[in-house]
Image (cartoon, rainbow, N blue to C red; front, side, top):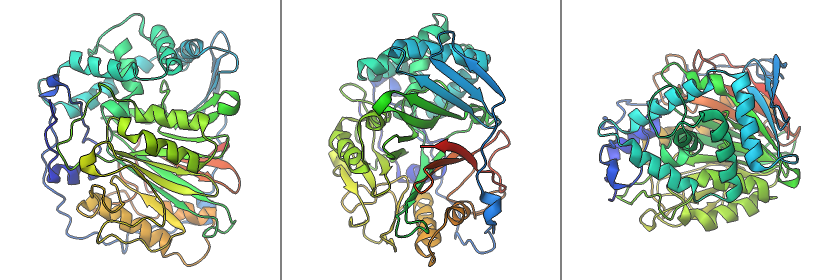
Length: 467
């Protein structure tokens, strides 16, 4: 069955609200409902009086101390508990993928005994947001298993090992405070199966920065959960595997990539896009784009190589999305178009022609929000209040900056808008899970991680270490 056409009003709201989650295109997805909300009633998005001036000292990243250490019995997984996140190392040089998966689950159970209950409850909040009626969990199970079977054997073995250790044999998608095999798979395919809607990315080139080296940032905005419970699960995962090593900022138990940087200095992040057309959203014959990003992290040594790979494989993926890819030299947004109705896969850079009516003032800066921006591809940018306002704000804050931008100034610009009780669309909003910054001068990875208290005006940047 072809999925219902995306309504323009729903898409506009989806850019503003994380709760706009899509389902699949199987016949049993009759109950999937796109939120039928009115477009934003904001008449204007003026920012005067809503800026916070921060000193360089107030945005200086600080490393967090290790509070406690948990290790799997075989030593393949080590978890260091910090104040704001878990620092996790998976040692692929000493174990098979399946052994790594089992070790990861074993260490998680030691570090967080309530892990399965927290993650399962979070998954069902997302499922209920996507399916308001007629939820067919067997159809959802079939979808995620189909996508899992499209993965390489190594990736499947990781998930198998993790699931066997964490689930105690539980099967099926059913809400009972215990994770099942299918729920483990669903969690690892969340972007493909229950897409989260809002993210943004920004980068400045070496000629724009004060050090002569690039700075790249990425905002991940998902459903935080009814009690902001996902904020208890911030983690930095070091996939230690020789030349294939990389570091991901993610959630415990995830093997795919949302935000990551590899040992060749390639940083990547994915942004949901969606479609204006009634194109099918199917699992059969398709593959996971979040695991394609994992492949890129392990096998590509430059942003250009990574972008070309993703452009070539875009038609194989499940849903339209952007992949933002940078290294110190280059920056690209791969418009991963799945359907011909939405255009053609391409690698967008500063020279790419944009949608009619869309402007960008500085070729030394590159930005992406939840829409394709290249002329000829579906335009959910100029018609969407949330996308358009964030695009214009990035342009105003970074492109119009006349002085060379230091790291502290970059962090200030990222967080200069008030978010508490703000009546306007912000580039950092109440669904922010994390902001990750790669500073190519110091080779440091920096993060802003939302706590259980939610997104606040006060910020505390964390030094995650070198990359």
